[in-house]
Amino acid sequence: MKENNDKYAIDKIEQAKEEVIGAISETMDLYGVTPSAGTLYATMYFQNEMNLDEMRTELGMSKPSMSTSVRKLQDNGMVKKTFHRGSRKHTYIAEKDFFSSFMSFYCRMWEREVKMNMEAIKIAEKDLKEIVDDQEVSQEIREKAEEHYKLLDKSKVYYRWLERLTVSIQNEEIFEFLPKESNEKNTKRG
Image 1: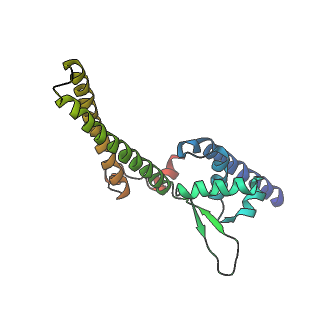
Image 2 (image 1 turned 120 degrees about the horizontal axis):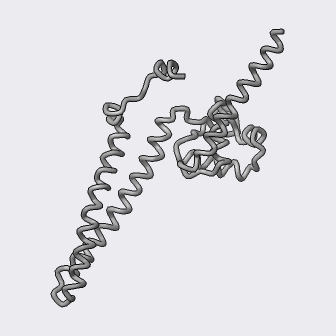
Image 3 (image 1 turned 45 degrees about the vertical axis):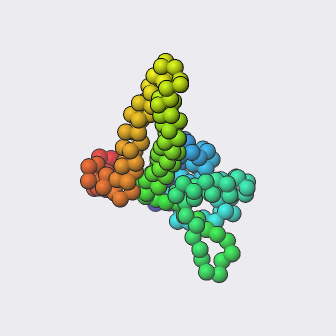
């Protein structure tokens, strides 16, 4: 009887894992990775660590595809390479702290967005300012340039806010305003 209960319980555990693995792989596009890389991450999430051969066996992916997926997950801060003395195989472990994964990925993306757009705005504003100040250019075109200049100036408010948001996430000040829930609360909710 106990043997049947254990088999049933093991099957239910696998079903629960598959449910979460499916959901994670479907939403990984938010992190810029393919569903197969999402499946890899979710599978690794339930493991302690895995090497490329174990991943390939578990998921049936080709080694090049597996390597590409692992590299992308590493770049996103979702998987870390681990080393074992005496072993020639690299092993990897999934970041199990979703806050850390979120913070790493989105802060890097937001920093990139701020940097690229603020640099572009600086260059564009300089060009637009030259047109606005050039009395040799018609009034209509100078007004159009000034309109664009003001529009860009207003957009800097967003980029400065995004920069502050990124810093508040990186230094974890955001949790003073939006605290993490404790596991106890999560357990009570179900």
